[in-house]
Image 1: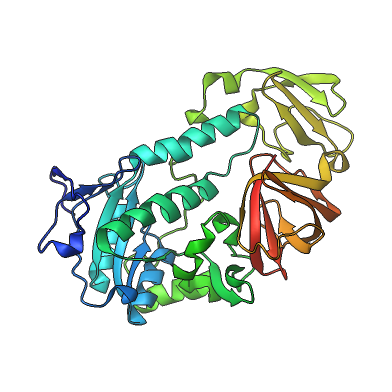
Image 2 (image 1 turned 90 degrees about the vertical axis):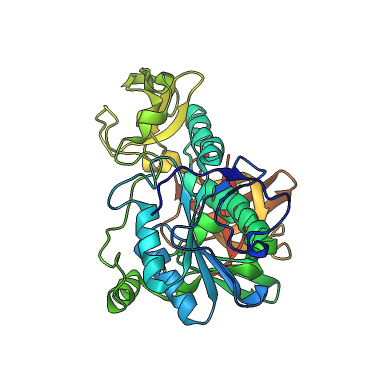
Length: 394
């Protein structure tokens, strides 16, 4: 990849596709996003706009196979990798180099989008704020909604005239009587629809998810069969902005201040190590031995206390969410029988919508749910398959 210093160029509304031979970096008006010069050669679309498609590529197996499948299906594909903190740094195994190598194998253009400033504002900043409030952040949901499927998509549409975007998430887009809907992946164990629920519903018809009908094993087999350079690359399970470091390294010192450990009635029973060491539902590392399994049930940053209790004490049937996003407004109505998830893993559980208003949605689960965590997401499903909407648990 070309590592030389390049000059910022302002397009004043023109598109790269309209400027023959254009290879310089272009700057976006929101959060200082920068589209850098192409890693291989400039994107020169040879088909009408409706057959053009951008693939967000992390340099991993899933997004690489996504690009391969779409090119094989006849799409005019361009690969795009986000340059985030701790990503795309010089050396072997970084996302930018790996994605560019795959694009070279596939014969498609590849670009880096420098989203460092936006990532700090939207993802890392909110992560710190949510943790400081004693809640459990979900940075992947925020990154998908506001950055990947928001600002970056806007940049690609404005710059290249590309309206369709694809990712390597395991989920599907399906037509329903209520319009296009985000659908769970065929493989429930790998389903990632939970992380995508905040996408603007107006974009669902142009969101492409080729891996929704595949298993991870099948995707790896495709990568090996066609000889992609990343076929054996291991899957990363860490937060992308901390690398191999502990996530506590980006939190403030106040989150490491010891305080009172209490039971769920507020009685002091010990001392906690600092709220950064705890999340709701946590069982290990509590520093207290009870007669039965105990879990974190409440975190109060103002009082600097952590409360623990039994599984029954930390479970809830009623869950309320704010900042909610609706995909199927005709479905997400009071008294509707739906199913919902309060964390990414596991199948949706039956529930009834008890309240929908401009600032909140409330559901009552048929059975108590273990440790609903403020800051995480409540995602609602129609017919156990289609995302009706969701919000941030409060």
